[in-house]
Length: 423
Image (cartoon, rainbow, N blue to C red):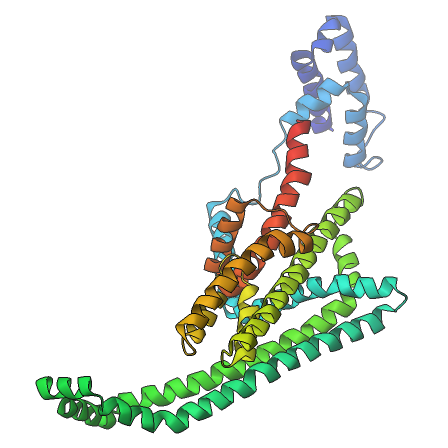
């Protein structure tokens, strides 16, 4: 009980020293309070009242200032990372987890590439699915119809590209010995052989390479690597097609599940912004595909008129290159012009004039009509976005650079600018 009495006296003393309200009490009132505390010895015993209850009652009886003054002298609860050991251990553990994540992410680059391609194709095909659903078709039937159309388009492209390529490779293989004989019997090569003894040197070099095991392993390794590259791309194409089908069928469910992660108060705003970004990305992908398709068809007609060989394969190549912003159409025109050299210089000149006129028609008629409601990205931003995307992800990055830049610009105008204006 002596400790209880000391506790109450200490509380009253702290009240008198630290609480300004306690100075309003005169010495007589303070003495009366101390005596009342001492008189509680006879009414309270340790067996009748628990120490915690007595302390709680004593704390409740005292004014606020006294309780606050005593609480200020209690030891503060320690910070979990106050110890240097715990802090260092936590930092080391975080660095280890970050390193493991980076290592695994680099190994999953191909998976992320397939996912990105599938997402981009899904956003491009979703407007077509929505258009069909507005015409009365169910979501499943619309997805099936669009997916069959996609598979059919890929099949047609394959039929246009693969047979001519195989035929050209076969012809080249059959004519290769004749090309070599013509080359060896050419006057300028005979003159070089007479001056520098090229035939003996080339024969010795070929014999040395044939006896070198590293050369054989390099050749076989290159062949196996090429076969692996083709097989990997075919598997990636099949994976992207299947993933696109699943994403296209479950896109509304996936979007709603993602929106549930946002706070209820911000969900409508985030939903509207995300829908607008996806609409612009899908519209750009679909519009760019339409522009490239028109370019390929017009190029095929032009090559048929001029008699340029392998027009179907070159038209498909022009269409694929047309998907690349800024430089794709120009690369396609250069390839067709080089192919026209095998016909005549006049045909090459006609190809150059055609593409100059067509580029003007595409820039001022086709693109504004197709892209009028999709993206509006300034020219400087377009150049920077394509360069950054191409550097990070290659051709795929260049393809998606402009819609990504359009989405970021939309966030800038709809979120950042209003927030800064409200400050």
